[in-house]
Structures are given as C-alpha cells and as structure tokens.
Image 1 (tube, rainbow, N blue to C red):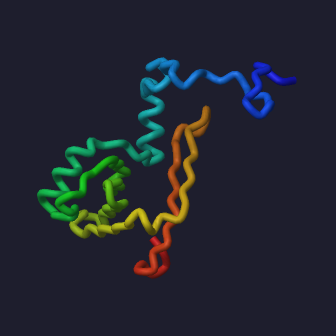
Image 2 (tube, one colour):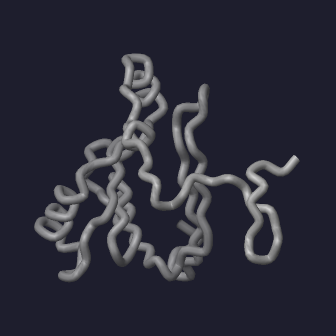
Image 3 (cartoon, one colour):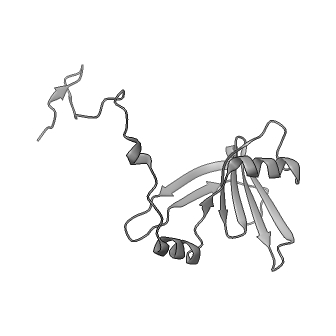
Length: 144
C-alpha cells in the first residue's frame, strides 16, 4: 500500500512527510522531569551529566591553560570525577586518578583521528544513552 500517493518528478511515489517549514512543537524537545528513582539509578549507574560549557571553558583557559587561545568548549559532560569535553578543535578527556584525586591524566584527541561513532538512545527500561567513539591514535600505546 502506498501512502500519500504523491509522485515526484521521476514518477516515483513519495511518502507524506511533515513539510520542512512547519515548526516543531517545543514540547517534543523538552526534557522529562527526573524522579527520585531516576536520580538514584543515575547515581548508582554513574550516569554522565551535562555541565555548563562556559564554566569548563573558563577553567581550562584559566587554571590549566589546556586550550588554545582560539579554542572554546562546545559540550562538556561529567561522570564521577572524570570529565569529557568537546571543543571546536578536539575531544579532551580529563581522567582524575587515585584516591586523593591529585593525579590527573589529560588525553587529547583531534577530530581528524575520529574514525567512527555510535549513539544509543535511552529506552523504556534502560534509561541511559551511550556514545561510542572509535579513534585512530598512533601516539597512544594500546589505544585510548
């Protein structure tokens, strides 16, 4: 069964789609409210939380001078003590080590080393989303 029965210029049937100029309801993009169970499961499951990119940008430009002068943080996520930063030039992983947290490993991956990625969205029973990034980094023994 062909829905819509619209033909394109070549005579092929095309489905009925929402026109590109039709606005999307803001309710679709609104985050769902987090309940007590969700917060507990997120804490136990060590879910990453989005953090303010402006604060991370100020910290990485100020204290550590890890970012270049023309580089800025676009996205940042915190998982436990570790932080994953997406700048306009690279991916930066800040790995806090040891019991005291005094040792910190900074791993920088330029976007040209990204070979692929996968995104898994949250489901009904599995409330976490996953991002996997495959890199080609000859300078890191054993891979990232």
